Length: 507
Image (cartoon, rainbow, N blue to C red):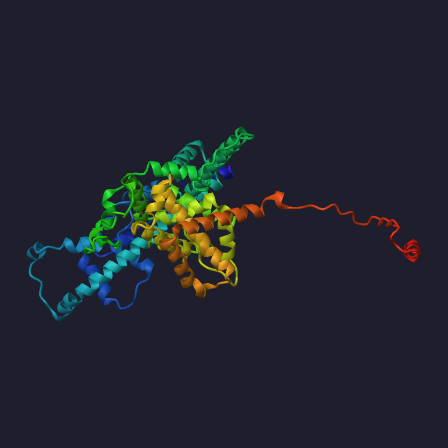
């Protein structure tokens, strides 16, 4: 019975609770002024500041259930409610000029003038009061909703079946959806991510089990060393751009002396004196490679340079840009700066030719370049030698070698570059030279390249023979030495005196 009485005393609906808390006294409504101007005059004349509760009860009209129902529904459903026009502004708008016609002219006294002067400030005061009252009302409505929710959870067994159904309906309407709850939304997103990670892990594990014992193909082509055969195939498929060779069409004076004693004649720079016309296509190929810039985006360019670096330095990691390139003799971390200044991709091709055909000689030159006393920039030296070889070709100093041999212009230029680089290394090593002798060594190589290019090739052949002889095991001679064995006794001969026989016997 006590439980039934307590359940009956409690309100069955949130509107009942609001109506119980709302002021419903007719005496207070009767004491309130009938006109908004009277209310303003009362607030202006009263110097005592009103509290927040007094402002709420004095400014706002009596609370009615029909007026509070939209706010309650907005709190329960979570939808924004329509804000009504402030009461003070509505009351002031209701005063029209017709009021003076209805009630007659009002006699303006001193107090009336003071009232009119204070009306703007009073209106602002009323607006501020209404704003604070509205906020206080919203706080009260939030409190009412919280109390109603607490009462629902606290006394579910004591409520009747009808009240329980009503409270269930309100709870379903007031239930927060996962889309609107940020905490639940973040947790759901996190769970989805973990599920995706789990699926990906299972897929990777499955692929690893299937690929177990199977040789996987290399995916990174750049890390794969390139062979000279692949480079040759790339050269055969290379298309020569004639427009890029315009800089070699400029006229230069022919230095060769004419037998008739006439004046020197002019010729295009690309017209190599004494070169057979059937070799002009290879000449254009060499000149086109000289003006083609080295580019890391080109796979063949990148693989050639990376193969040289990996084999010489014995390092598998080779980024595109970095200080590791200085080991090969570049001046900075970007090889394109030195390569494209003069020679372009032809610098890399001629060094790769030396690397592919005479690796032992290049390895020896590389190790000498790393010496503390005799160090020198290997690749910068190679770039300068490539420039000398092209100058000698355009001057006609290599035409005889190109015409007599069966290898063509490109192979002849690569051989001359290898011979020049080996001669530079040989003079640097045998003469114990340092970085201050760089210009002197260059002049020696230039003199042989322009005057006796065949001599350079002979010295290269001698260097190759010496390198092979050092690694040839047949040149080693083995002797039969028996360490630790007893020395055999010498046999006595008739030519020796008797006293020596006795001496030898005593031994």
